Length: 214
Length: 209
Image (cartoon, rainbow over all chains, first blue to last red; front, side):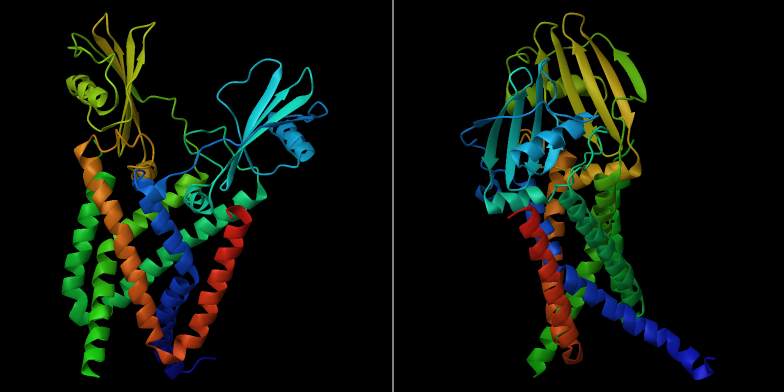
């Protein structure tokens, strides 16, 4: 059973842990935050030399494969990938030509086009290799899913792991922000100026998030 | 010693106040991550469709390219009382139609112009608060760089989004300094920094390098 002195110390202990949590999370996620901040900047400035993504296809090659098997398009694509020794996130071209089975494979460091002629069993594969720097930029938005394309879904394990990392960073930042509000509010001499700058941030961000909606 | 103490105080105050200012932007960017990663939206369902007639279609729009096409398309978009960032201008020559998507937080509009009939079908789709945040998260973005920022508020948002990055980098760098000043927390901090770096480089190696 807790004594009254233990109970009176509880807020202090929570406060100390809130502060620790703030910088522990910040230290753990530091490199993730820097990656997403810098690549976000590159995404908003596509004309910068650092933002360019090489898009030159390498030479294509052909391979004879067995007809793809599977009860869905994605299962057949995975079957073809297994035969060709490829892995990554499957993306579909806007149209399928009759007699062919075409799809693309995306990973941050490489884009691959796979074109299968079902009549001859010939698969044509073409890679577009990215630089490591470009791959970092691509990883910013590499989630395997587009909210405005309900048919898109993640089908590569590593994409799922990466999405978990992105979600964890987002959650960690939210916890850090919430904790920082508490720490600031406990500093009475800094409340007034704190309210002013917080109100300025809320107003400018709120204008875009809610004020332009009509 | 006094200079060191003054530096510490200034750093602490800047970390606090700049962090408070940028915090609503950080919340907007982080909350929209969950939407971008997990949500599914049927963008084909318009919530309102309206037809506007007697349009003044600016001459030369069919042959205009890039920013010029957007500026001419803006004349039509203004006539149908739509405002926002014009995504692109597509001319379907066989049907003599223009398709002009226009976006802003809270609403996505497609203006479909029938040139011979001088009419436009305006399809609006209201987006929820989370989709609005996701739109801002991706704005202005890397696509159609020549056209981006054709709406005043997109240009303002670009500065704010860039500013958010710079302030977050500053706040994280000052956070490092403030942590390092606490001797008792250095060891565990270094362990966490190392664990984060190991996770970071391990994941990057697996997916990107």
